[in-house]
Image 1: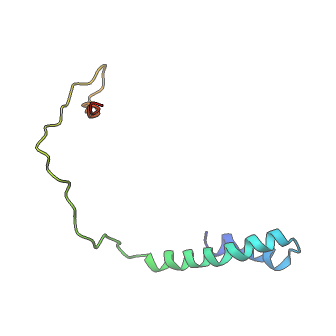
Image 2: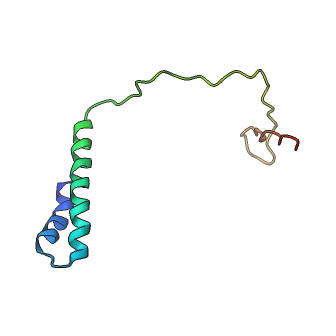
Image 3: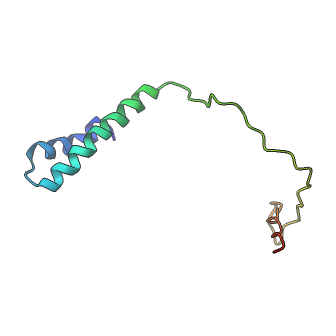
Length: 85
């Protein structure tokens, strides 16, 4: 939400006598303000992962691909066979 969308909630929080509404708004408004502050801090920034790029382990097993049925152009990768039990 932005500042204008949250205004009715703040107005209600200051006027209501309903204890459930006060409890909800007392918990919701601080969380929303923190979220909005974080969102504003990200405006204009590029956020990227700073962690290492992890490659999946190479198993050497080929992936079977079959032709699609019907008119689809998408190849089909069947799920792996279930392990024998």
